[in-house]
Image (cartoon, rainbow, N blue to C red; front, side):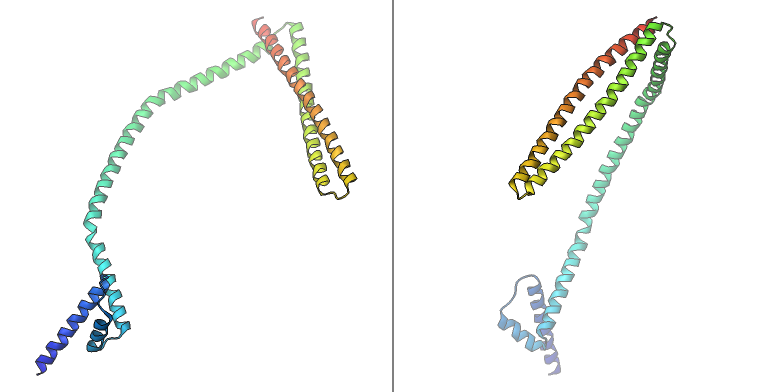
Length: 226
C-alpha cells in the first residue's frame, strides 16, 4: 500500500516536472491540467512560476555551454587572421623603413642645402655695393611697410564700421517710432558706405604691395648678380 502511494506521488512529481518543462519551452498545457497538477502535487502558482524560471535559466546556461566549441573555433580563426595581418604589417613596416630611411637622410641634406642657399641669397643682397640699388631697395621696403600698415588699418576700420552698421540695423528693428527707426537705418547705410570705401582703398593698396614686391624681387636679383 505504501509502495503504491509512493509510486503515485512520484508519477505526480514526474508529471509536474513535465509541466514545468512544457511551460518553459513555450508549450503551455490547459489551465485545467495545470490546476489539477498543482493540487495533486501541493504546489502553488508561485512555486510553478519559480520552477519555470529556474528551468528557463538552466536552459540558457546549457545553450551557452553548448556554444563554447563553436566560439572557440571562431576565436582560433580570428587569431590566425590577426597573426597573418600582423605579420604582413611587420613586413610592410620593415620595407617602408628600408625605403624611407635613406630618403629622410637625403631630405635633411637637401633642407640644409636650401637653408645655405637662402642664407647666401640674403648675404648677396646685404653685401651688394651698388649704392643706387641699395637706396631703391630701401625705399621700396619702406613703401611696402607703410602700405601694409595702411591696409591693415583700412580693413580694421571697415570691420568696425560693419559692426556699427549691424548694431544700427538691430536698433532700428526694435524701434517703435518710425522716424527713429529710419534714422538708425540711414546711419547704418552711412557706416556701410564708409566701410565699402575703406575696403576699396585697402584693395588698391594690396595691388600696390604686389607691384612693389615684384619690383623688390627684381632689384634683389640685380644685387645678387652684381
